[in-house]
Length: 153
Image (tube, rainbow, N blue to C red; front, side):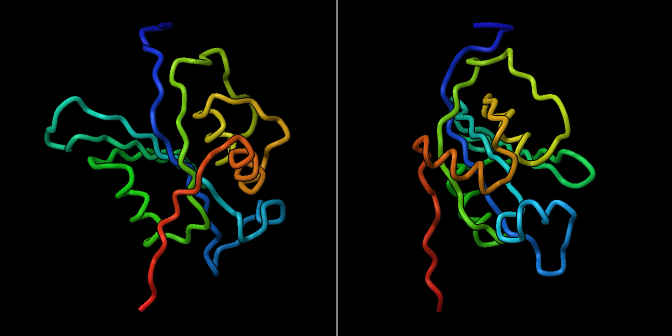
């Protein structure tokens, strides 16, 4: 344990999204419109049911102007399903992150959605700069797709 943080493995999800049809940003020249954005959810099991339920899920996302953090009371699988219905999601990767393993890593430089997710994962991959590259790297390391198959009626 360093700095009072016990070492443990927690479930996490990385969500990859396409751009809105009317939206265009300069970084779409690099990322393309299909793999335009990514963000991350991290789940934490609470010991007993409370006001928020048995699970607390933290969503961290960058926007063009700030970093947006939401806290949800609920199981992360339900939030993944909602994210796929409500948003323009390409894929959702489920993985387990090691909390307390690499406290010495601190990202420096411009903050992007990919650099924020890499910081939350505690990895330093200097050649991974776009959401598509991050997706390929995580899949190559064994992250599983958590996509929900929806029926069209």
